View 1: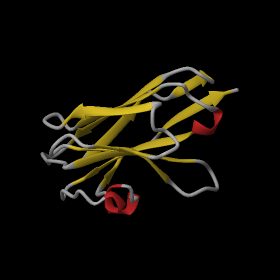
View 2: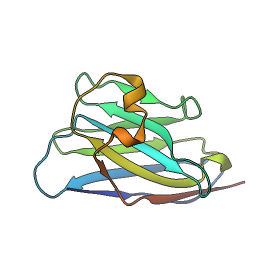
View 3: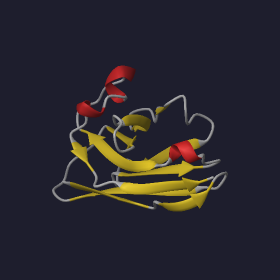
Length: 127
């Protein structure tokens, strides 16, 4: 199974970007798909996730109201619409997928609980 992330780039503060992630390879069904980001020298941090069962979405406090996660569970695709971008949003963004369903917030927001990861896409926000 491979996750392919795309849509990163360079944008000015206040601008928008839309990230996408698609799964390919042998058939699998994800239950939760999410986005994480990492800045060199810092730990990877949770950004957003969507649980297919019920369509619940989860966000880090730092992106609430600015980012929106959406997707299609049948296609195993997930998108992250990022608006009002700030320089502190600059990072490599990774998509991830989890096989076993959970509604536990701590599990959903923990990267090590995910089974598959994309290669990352760079997002740079200039001030």
